[in-house]
Image (cartoon, rainbow, N blue to C red; front, side, top):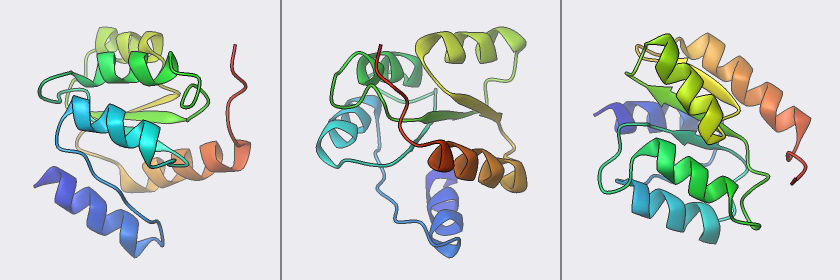
Length: 116
């Protein structure tokens, strides 16, 4: 339900959206579909969002992709863990859509991170 709501909101803002149902699919689509940015739920099945982020950031083809953690994990330690895994930003649920849009626009404007 959250994925569907987020997808509809992003489409309404003019973004093209690709979704993944678990961490394995997120990694595969991140590598194969060439997204400009990833919104990563940290509580994914099979491979959690922290590990999926680490793997994407460790892969040359995707290491530059900005990743925003969007999660129900709201402790300060969860935020720190997400940033340590390689997330560029962190947004706790319930999502502040105005703030999330600001994060997305800032990261897209900044462009790809420089590897290394």
